[in-house]
Structure formats: structure tokens, C-alpha cells
Length: 330
Image (cartoon, rainbow, N blue to C red; front, side, top):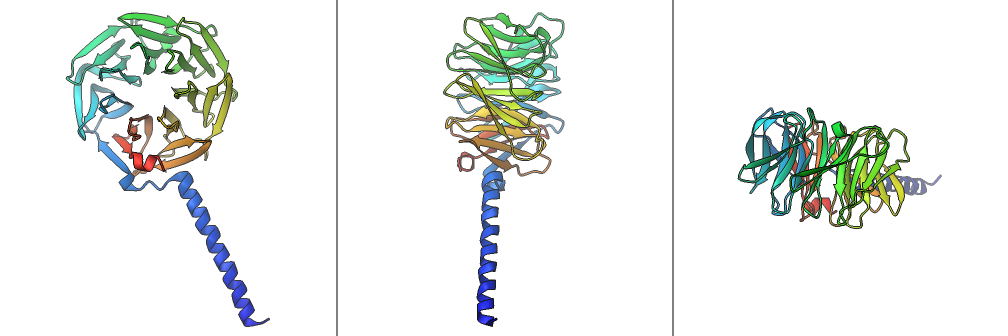
């Protein structure tokens, strides 16, 4: 065989192989992100033992976060962490929401309370009237009511003007955890052990929907601008959607990722945390992209998106972090 022909064939094969490798690399980067340190801003806790759990962003872009096993609530303003003290340690403060006035509401199962804290540190609390409390997530409604999941009452509770209204689904199979409220005032919730999605209308009519994947363990939930409910399937390793009376489910890439936290950005992108994947993920137009966090020990537990498009996360390894909007929108 002519050596020139052989060399040309080899060259074509080599170039072809390089094209495949480069294309695969680009595809991987598009799907997984490269976690460039410059894409992130992270705030380490000022007290080494602090464990940030829930995160939320206020109308003035103040970032609030609850702190597990601590006698304080956290706030990030002007690039600095502030620790606002409270009377007792809060063992499992997973519920957090910010109202239109910029005050943060949080669950306090230790003291069996729901509390509202101002940036000044002033706290007003509302007793739940039960001997104990096991509380889940929290959300604000358009009318200023605050909703929260209440396992000890087997349902979802609305607090408005100091009055508690408890909504209990008919099939009490347990595990109320996530809650979100859409622009029409419809509350959505998840039953983890019941494997159901719950819809509560403003007139307190309750509808229950069985999630297609058995034993999916639905947890966090959020609603988009069109009223669709998006939720995490913790054991199913899926992101679920309920809209127009039907479910859609999206398999998150990789094995069980420890999905936790969910938020919907203004552009419709759905964001979530991957506890075991040390990353945050985005679902947009049916496609996933995973953004690896700067630290290999990162464990993002909850996420929130501010009005600029920055994606915030509470990392239970001791950080509150942010993926910059410039990277998040790519």
C-alpha cells in the first residue's frame, strides 16, 4: 500500500477521533458544568458549628438562612453575614420564607412556634398550640398568609392575622413536607410517605394526586409563573411536574443524587440541589445541566433564585453560596 495513502488514512482517523473527543468533552461540559471558581461566591459560616439549612431571598435582595442546632437566624447583606440571635437553639429549622416587607418567617419546632424576624432582629412568634411539632417547608401566599407543612397535624397549615387554619387531606398517609403557593392563592404540598401531591384551593377544597413513580418520596416543591407545580422525587431521583391535570417526570442524570431543594427562576428554569452529587442542577426546556460546586464536600440542601437570576444555596457543610446569574443563564 502506498505510504502516502496510509498516512492520509491515519491522519483522517486521528482527526476523526479528536473531533469525537472534543465533541464529547463539550457535551459533558454543557450537561455537567465545570464549576469554575469564578462562577461562584461562597460565604463560610462565622461560627464553625453553624449548619445552614433553608435559604430564601427577600424583595430587597437580602438573603436569609436558617441555622440548624443554633440560637440564631442568618442574613447576608452587602456581602456580609449577620447572625441575629434568638432565645433558644432551633433543632430542625427547615421552613423559611420572606414576606413583601422583607421580614423572614421560619419554623421553630423546638419551641413549637412559627416566628417572624425583622432585619433589626426583632422577633414575633405564634404558638402552634400542640405539645410537640414536626414541621416541614414554608411558603408565602399573595395575600400575605404564611403556609407550612405540619406533620404533627397531618397536613398543611395557613397562618393569617394570627389565626391558624389547618388543612388535612382525607387519606392521611403521612409525611407532609413541601409547600408552595401560586399566584392564584392555590397551595400545593407533598406527602413524602404517602407519595402524593396535594392541592388546596383558596376555599379550602383539597385534591390529592398519586405520583406515577411508586415510593418516589416527594419532598420540596415550587410553582412557576404558569401555575405548574414542580417537585423533587428524593428516592425516585427525578424532577416532577404537575400541570394541566397531568404529571411529567424527568430523570436526573446519574445514580441516586440525594435531590433536595427546588426553586423556579423567572425564565422558567428549575433549580435543585444534589446532596450526594456536590452540585446544583438546572432543568430547562427538558434538558439538564449540572453545576459542580467548588468544594468536593459541598452538600447543597436548599436553593433560591433572586430577581437578577443568581442561584443561592444553603450548604449544610457550613456555607451559603451563590452561582452567578451570568453562569446560571448559559
